[in-house]
Image (cartoon, rainbow over all chains, first blue to last red):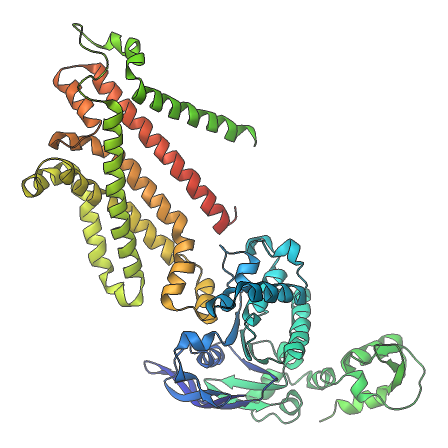
Length: 310
Length: 249
């Protein structure tokens, strides 16, 4: 659990972050969104003290982050940035081993952790452990960057526009991986992004920032249904908010009991995709099946549309 | 691609073999130099051992380069830290003076202070060699990718850990290039040390000038040149290997 209390950052006379308070649940993903210059990156960087707050404080599991030297604090917090910042003169394995080495883990423990992470991130250890970062594709480099951040099993992972430099297909995969990894390791993730779509897809809660202040901090559904501010509704997108609401719910969650005619959809896809599919084939209803292929319910166009209303 | 390096390797070995042969058995080259002498003067320098002189010169140059490197890299690190940034103009001025002040003039100033021999030469070469190492260290440290530095700090490296395990390794190819320039310039410059009685191949050249013996002048210059080329080449190869691991292509 991360508690941000009345946190501010001033550079000379400009206030970059202005009295922000947030309570971030353990094992959740929180997105901080906002336009450039809204102070979202500065807020993130104050959590691991790459930027020292001017006033206010940050508590991680009840402990003030200023209780220890900043570099020791950062070894307990994973950090991923846009462009990865992999060490170009070190192999993939050495890059991943950075924090465990700083923490003086023994060699065998480091080796097995590096191996585990390479496998989790679908990088064949035999092929990639000794490769240098420049020999990897952009998507692979990004995965190594996340693996490096998670190497010492941090409770908290901070990500600053982690997928900004990736093309849409790789980005989609990276987001999917992040969700799977967060579920696997139970890490508390805070991700800064300017991409609303990304925030809604990843986050349990979203903090919308503008001019250094948090305008609203809520679940994606509440942000869409009850925006606290005209800026929030502009940022979350007035025109397609109904579709965005649909994208927050999976077919499995919305399925009605009973059997149905029509195309078969997986329980894990969003209602938005189901609706699109129904429109495409002109059907009125769909059969929802779970990952084993067993029918677990039905969805009708009407039921889907009802989910998209405020 | 496989032939070009082979040809250059061959040339490198030929140069090395020529240098070693000349230094170990100088008399076998006497017939080559004989036409350059007059009135039966010796074609090969006979007032000292060429190998000893060459090694002495190399030793002086390496010692001076080591001192220049320690000071120039140290200054480069200092002025790229936030706390030392204010010393940049001062350091730059000092290092530039070292390069602008002619080594001969440094010798003239140093002799009254430290006497004849190796010492004034070391001082002159040290001052002369600072600039390329300092400027290259500066560029190397300043051009480290910001994302890499941010990641290093974000991972929890302390400032010294970041310097020694990220910044210096990334700047190393450029620092080495500076050392190479400095060393090569100084192999040649070191010959003037013989005017203040430092041991070196300059002795051969000066003896030739004094006795109008073209053979002496030529062999002194030739040996110095060969040493400079081989040194340059060896350091360039080392740099290239480092460079390949740091940045592709």
